[in-house]
Each structure stands twice: as structure tokens, then as C-alpha cells.
Amino acid sequence: DAGITQSPRYKITETGRQVTLMCHQTWSHSYMFWYRQDLGHGLRLIYYSAAADITDKGEVPDGYVVSRSKTENFPLTLESATRSQTSVYFCASRVGTSGIVETQYFGPGTRLLVL
Amino acid sequence: AQSVTQLDSHVSVSEGTPVLLRCNYSSSYSPSLFWYVQHPNKGLQLLLKYTSAATLVKGINGFEAEFKKSETSFHLTKPSAHMSDAAEYFCVVSEEYGNKLVFGAGTILRVKS
Image 1 (cartoon, chains in turn blue, green):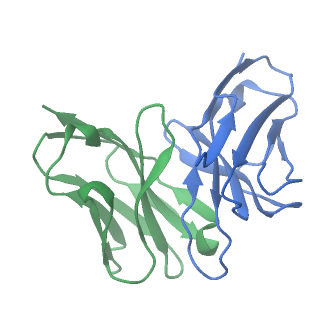
Image 2 (image 1 turned 90 degrees about the horizontal axis):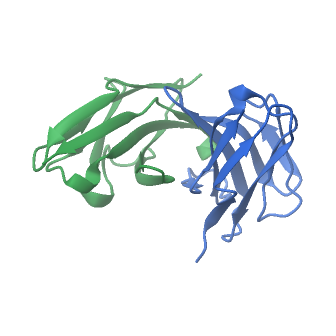
Image 3 (image 1 turned 120 degrees about the vertical axis):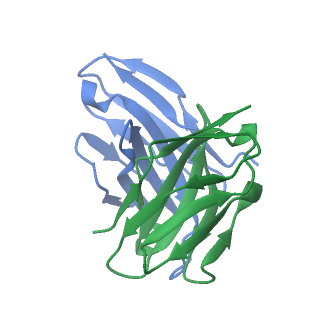
């Protein structure tokens, strides 16, 4: 049971470059999420998706783009990376039961350094 | 808007002594609350969640949390700390049936031998 995986686990890039972080889940969960974790802020929601081709902004979406053409994949793209996007990025997923608070399950994270 | 305040950024206990990690929340309606744990260089793991059923919630690894509406608190406890409990703990409040999670800043728990 692979669960939820992220790739790459570590990435170093330069300012202005485009970077794509991958997230893959094997549970067929409807919802998927991207968070960033910075010291003193806990995790903050970047984008989320309720199903294929349905995405919505979270708390800190600026500078990021997402897509979801398949249920199991939810890539996050930094179109032109900036130093302020140096962070640890977590992907999460959950089932989509209507009206019930379901648990989000998190991937292992991707550490991104923008030079 | 909902918010979470974790009252201690660091907590240090001796192995075998009780653990108390404090969390206060702000919510305009009946909240759902979670505690997650993050071990170094790992992802987040759910410890327990409160969703308006019993106010005392039991989680994994001997952890418990009590929802107190009058105090707007959801403190995490464990009777006896183990070395493996050393990690960072996040209190989380949920909007939209678990879609928008609002995280506290985290509490780092250190367990001394």
C-alpha cells in the first residue's frame, strides 16, 4: 500500500526557474491538498482540489499553479521560483464523503531550496 | 475566521512523566479539531480528532485530548512520556468538513531520559 508519495524529496533550484513538485496517491481519494511549512507558521494551505479538473485557492496561492487531470495526481508548479518559496511542501489527501469531517493524510514532504 | 493558538512553542519533560500540550482555538461555529504529530524529517501523522461526539477523545500511542467549549481549549495529554514521543505537535481546526485546515504554529516536545 503505497499511500501518498511526493517527488522529488529534495530540490535545489535558482530564482526564476520553473519547478514542479509531484504528488501521487493510491487511495482514489477525491480531495487533494498542497501545504507549505515554514518556521513559526505551522502549515499553510496553498491550493486544494475536490476532484479531477476542480481546484481552488487556499491561504497562500500566489506564485503557484496546480492542475489535476487525473484523480491520483496533483502537481504543484512554481512558475518562476523566488527565495521566499524556499520551504517544505506537503501534499495531503482525503476521501470526499459529503457532510463528514474526514482525516487528511499527508505525504512525506518535499524540501525546496531556492537560491 | 478560525484560528489556533498553541500556547507553548517548546515543552520539555522527563521520560515517564505526564505530557500536557496546550491549544486554544477560535471558531465562529462548532469546530472540528485535530492533533497531528511530526517526527523529524517525516510527514504528519494524525493522533486524534474531535468532531462533536464525545468531548474526551482518545488517540494513538496513549494520547488524549479534551474539548472544552467554555474555555475554547483542546489540550493534548499523555500520562507517561516515552522517548519516542519527542516530535513536533500541531493543533488544527477545520473549516468546510476537513477541507481547510488551520494549523497552529506547533509545539516541540523534548523528552529527557
